[in-house]
Length: 261
Image (cartoon, helix red, strand yellow):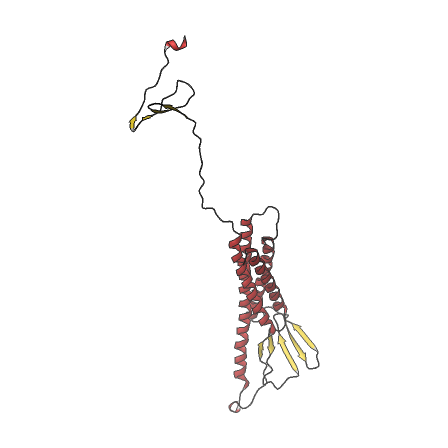
């Protein structure tokens, strides 16, 4: 899979997951009434994060918002906070990932900057998905605990032969929407992080080599060669290599008085 394809697929999955998280947070059916072995079926109750609803057999539905914050269970408030944090992080990472797409050119933005933005948005998508999954899982654990506690209290008196009417709640549709949305956001974030490696520019392993042109002329002589600057006779003579023997001329020529006549 190419880098552009991986990035675009991750972006679309994260976008779909973020939309699912928003939908799950606003849904009312986080917990629904368990109708199994329930003698009263004319009224159906279900609850969400923000309000509780009652639907009658005639089709009339009445919803009542939660008018308190401090009076709500601590677990419900924690689930609210997790879902809101996940949505905010997902929205911010969505904006960042739009500018990080390789198929979109904005000015003279370099590939290294797009790679960093892609990695940042991928990490934020992963955290957003984890927040959504954690929030839904906490609410599901609360439902399971209350369900079994309600089941244990349903049969009282006469050796457990008398059944009391008590409302039990089970998983609602919003829980499954939240799990799927959180998973999609998490997978999209991972794909964005993988695409970051392809966007980063590859570093060259070749070392730069500089070449300097020699400023000396070489004068060849029958017995060897002598290096000189060629700018006049007032220059210092270099080493003379004759055959395989090493001889060094350290003498310096001095002008005589007859040179100026």
